[in-house]
Length: 79
Length: 254
Image (cartoon, rainbow over all chains, first blue to last red; front, side):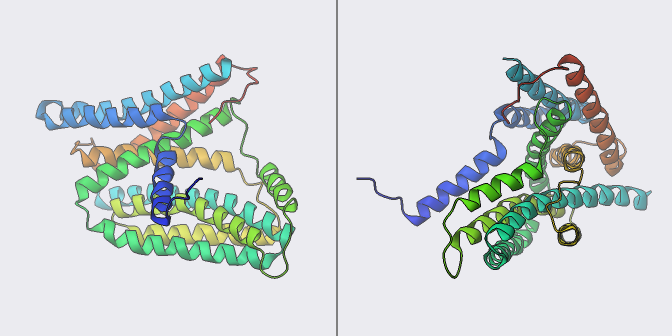
């Protein structure tokens, strides 16, 4: 016999599912890449010498992430 | 110099919030029109009003609370979320422009919604199906507007302006929808989505950098430079995909 989860559990599950769909969804590569970008740029900006490089690396990695995700979609379409 | 930098940031903020709100309003309106035309307007209006009240309550609850989060942390979180959200939007827009994904078709969405609603039995009195469908349509599309308004508005310390711009966009699209008395399929929605994607990614990149204490060359003016960079790259990606897969018929699941 299936027992229906309680209201708070359903609300929490719905809340979690919303954010999962919103941030990860069907493009997990973008989610992971943004976490990596934040990590790399944080390391660069903490080091005084490389702070200027961080201003270049951040948009370059953003552009690269979009390109990689598009390439993945293109490959999927070609299958 | 100060007025130039302030206004460039405000222009990007206003553009992003206005376009994102208008696009989501078009999608919500399509669903509400389908519900109203198929099953009557009373429950469609009730569902819409209740959804708008819930969204207003979310802004009222979380807007002032977010202002108290330390600015660097807020900008880093907002930047990260906008970067993810913007890259998702831009990816879809590029795939649609290059023909790898079917364009968003409000006519088709309207027809699907009408078919689904017509298949449901009608009740005397209050129509629960109409109410739920209108509520879900407005609430879910509106939630994206709320997230855009809250993230952009609070991180730029211009939440009031962001709320006003979003409200103006929603009212304008609503009036336009009522005047033309049909779903807004003639609006260039895909082009608007691409513009929103570019603006969100630019803001996401900028705030992520600000949150991580990156010194942007030119300060706030760099935001305009980022918009230009992402616009150019988007154009190049569309050209690349079009040239490399001119006859691609398979649609991408996104």
